[in-house]
Image (tube, rainbow, N blue to C red):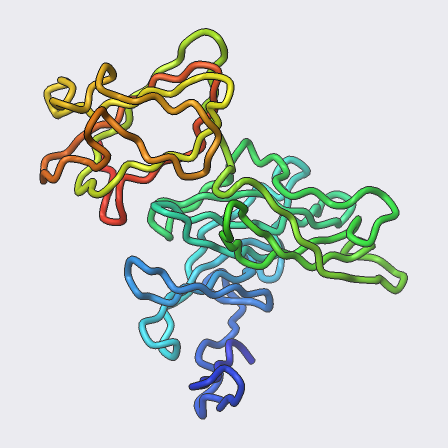
Length: 306
């Protein structure tokens, strides 16, 4: 019938919405289908649903559509946000779960190998506005199937990611056979982990590497970085709009990061907080024998687009 919703004040006792379905299934690209993940965007407060959809002529190839709502009852017309060439290098997709991680949105795309062996593994996708999406890392597999003969060697479907302590947790359902399996499949629930927000890193060896961020507006509080500098060092400076180091926040003022932590507080001599100014700043990094995963310049910080 489509998307049907229910409501609860305690998470235990539920009441179905009397006018279900709130969104109907239609034979068009602007329609939801049967695999769905819902999240609430903390920036806008909107509820966002990502579902499996179909490319025309309907049904032909699976893709990802998006719909949003302010009240969980009235939903926008679904729009296609990820489609594919539908060949072995970019096959179909079977749904996507989305998590909001700092200033970005990360999706776990269930990549359906059709054409192919009809197995389903997971690719990583990224968005900066929760609307426009791209497949990351050249569409390489992010979360692979288990080894042949294992309980999750055929298909895996992920829940949204959770950050807990020093890890990013990914719970998933796994099956020991592909989508088109003719025999009874067995299933289970698995857990994959990685360093908290450790999806990618900028690395430098013995030759020093450096880079400067785009301008950042509304930076506030301490500057926190997720980095492993246990065998090297990372120096950080703040740069103003004219390209000049901010007084008291230069490389010479910086106390280098030389350990491994998901949350280093950057310090410059007697300073451990960003300057309280409305002006945009850039952050410059100088790295040697270290890996930088990500950084935070306060909850209100936003990157200024060029």
